[in-house]
Amino acid sequence: MNEFLNFAGRYKILSYVSCLLSALSALAAVLSLWYVWNIASCIIFSEGKEYISDYALNALIYAVVSVSVYIAGLICAHMAAFRISSNICLSPDVLLVPLKYITCIMPDSYFSFFSSVSLIALLFWSDWRLALVSIAPVVLGFVIMVMTTISGIKKKAAMPQKTSGSVICYTVAVNSAFLFLIAVGIGISRLGVSKEFLKNFMLAVFAAPLLSIRLTHTIRLREHQLELNASLKRIKETLNLKSKEENSL
Image (cartoon, rainbow, N blue to C red):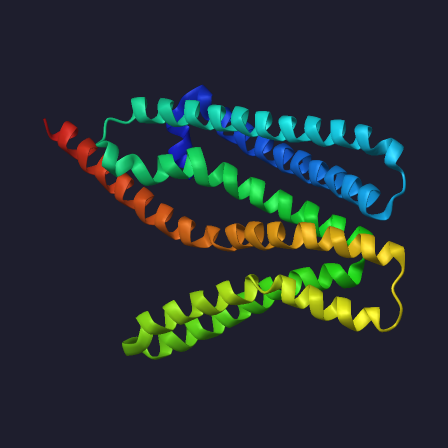
């Protein structure tokens, strides 16, 4: 990929800037979520209501910063991609996959990774038990997907069915985060529930769906990487062929 980015010339740095901005955007988005959780806590538990306006303003500011920074990152990525497209005289169909990777998938993957890390850190900061419960469905789904895919590879005739089944199992496991949270909440409530635990439980309810989505994006990045490698190989072969034809003239 680095060799392909060299075609952007001095605009190459913009592709890395877009990744940095995507990471900063993810951190700002998680901070906005944290302030929204504080607002909900103040309303539900009727305490600290004098801080609601400050929390709301901070949530809005970080949300706007997150969106603005992410858009700036996409602009940088597209500028690098347009420069590559102008420097390589190939059909747009040939360049579609790597340019899509630069302009969309790469910034989104950084956003997903850093937002996942930030959400996990926030959950562990609030309550490590709820953090483990929020992560468990994704880990379980990923293990099931890997196991069923390996089983399908060993039985090549059943490969399409196995692969489809693994995706279904993974999706069901990831979307069951609420069931895990409810089960743990019921179990812990029998031992006595404090107001602090209820606040942390509410944060987990806020964060768990977002965490599942972002971790899924991060895991599926491998599929895009394989597609990218195949496309870059085809581009390299095409460029080598054109170079040979020009040298023979």
